Image (tube, rainbow, N blue to C red; front, side):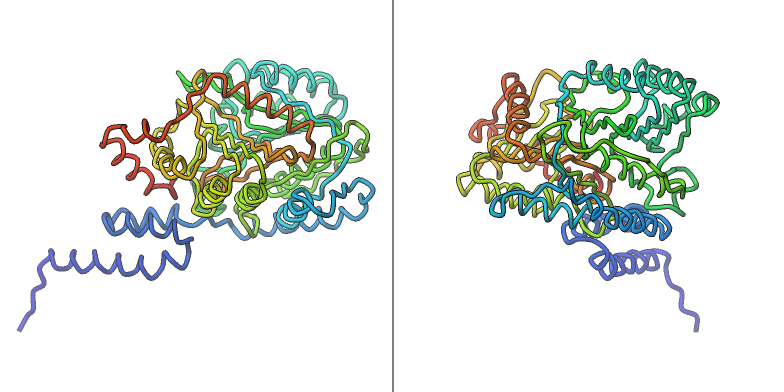
Length: 472
């Protein structure tokens, strides 16, 4: 007797097999919050959700890339004892003592004294300063950027690199393969012909499967000029309005002093990971350029822990009077959200500075879903109006500032290669407070009562967008 199974039953069985496989597999491979989002997607759309999870659900890197990161970290740690005269020793009791130890254990770099920190808040002036420093370079120019567009800024940087190379300056350019695709397409060939070494980071296309999860990106923005000057911040190599209707406002640090060594070491690490070549950077300037103790904090999926998230949470938890967080993208994990709530409920003045406009619609709707619970806890939320506020920084009490490429979202915490500069200097914090005050002068403060009067359909869209936090 033949048994005929209807195709509908086979599809039903296959559907549930996918759901059960996902239930057994995803929670083991992903953090609980991310696992919930993925299981919900697979539960609704099993034939679509599980393949998508296999592509994007786990931030894995190829073995070779992990080994090269481990080698780079070991080289950095081995080199530190010989630079002990540069180490800054914070007061035994206090926030800086805790944070310096944690940051060194996470990201390998020790705090160093004698740095000069200039905050560049003007978009065009910051780029002009970078190009002027490239034009004055005598030995080396090393640039690492997430975005480079085929526009006026991209062409200006390309021209400066060609001029430097013609003078005999060795120039290297690392660009994210996806974020800087327009710049790579337009400038890679002419730059290489001019003698500039150009490499794409985390190459996409058919090569991604052998290298890493396909949507991992190098989101860092770094420049190193003659081992004397470093740049770090949120600004890319593109005109301010590279997204039409959303002109960017940024914040960049121009750095001199021994922390420039750390920028050089991080650039050399990324160069090693991408090319396999170990760079010899030569001699660096010693302490004495300034008075600021500083420490570089790299973060990314090649590290054992979520460095950026852990430092942000530690800073918020140790705040006693005031903490101001500025970010264009705010989709926090449970640990970050909890730290902000507890700090505000404990009487700390917690202020979150966001952009009223956004170039990421899904992220914009998702971040709105957090406003109610934060406002109820006493967190002050302000929305900056004139531009798209793309700056990324944090200030705590009068003691610590963190400035760099780190967004307060899942992508920056777990998926992207990021970097921040920790400055343990009340003078730098005061200058950053002045920048924050300028934001507040052109910002709208949210009121809990008014916020709750928004249309009900807004709340529904916000909640649905929040479910996709692991995909942002």
